[in-house]
Length: 247
Length: 119
Image (cartoon, rainbow over all chains, first blue to last red; front, side):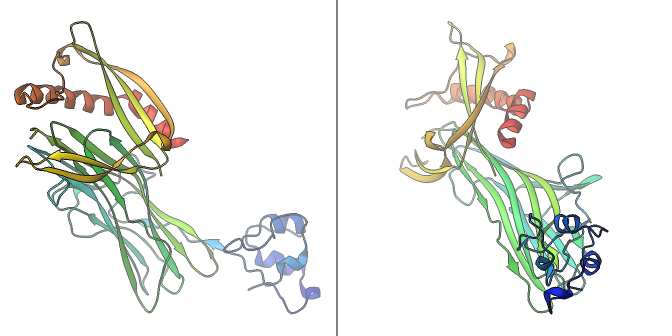
């Protein structure tokens, strides 16, 4: 329950202590420095400390971490996801046949929870998802992980590919990073997807490598909650093009 | 987010045999759209945009020397003029791919890349 705002004089240390779930204290300094607001909108945490700053204060909390389903989290040893394609040809121009590797991630939020899916971006790549064992990742979605929080708790979500691109300085290629901003939920269910992929091309006896590595990150936002990174799955995506002729 | 560009500077002895490679990893604040041209199978010049790098975006770099195993050394090198000797080019390319694979899995490479990403 938010701290009373009807009049400054009604704000009590005990009311603040009851609302601030981060500590148990009757010390204003302690209550102020440990206070957590969604959006961190006031100067509550900074000295000088005033009881009046707690008017309307609601203690925020982080969303709980997601639960791994078929794909391990980045904290586990080894990679959660891999995708790889090497194409050797007389010439590998940057067209639809150029090697590509990557992922499409879909987030679905409904009345039952929030579900994070992944599939490979490009059907010609060789891709895996890993959790204890390595499994083939295809262009059919696999449930990576999920949160028990529902659409009534989640007002927005964000899909972020935190990626490093490593490239050779021979041949061509690029990384397409489709990370989203905050996407609003609405109605009884909301679903949205985003892709990251790399593509390589080469000509005249060159070899080109485009490798993306990093984390697929899912963030949640909601009233009374801090913006929270709830799931991170580490990945590697690599496209290699080798040209065996020079025209 | 980081962007790492790999450059390989092949060091040869007096007999022109490749002995080692100076591996340079450059961290760039961003990749830059550059244009490349090539001749297609019909000999027609084509061009395309790709993620390249320019000196202005370079943030930092690391380098180390990779010593080429004796059985992978060669006096072949990549041709720069037409017409190319395809057999020689492909024999050289075979070696180059072995070097590249070994370099990318070497401890020195992983360490250098990790340092640049961690900055």
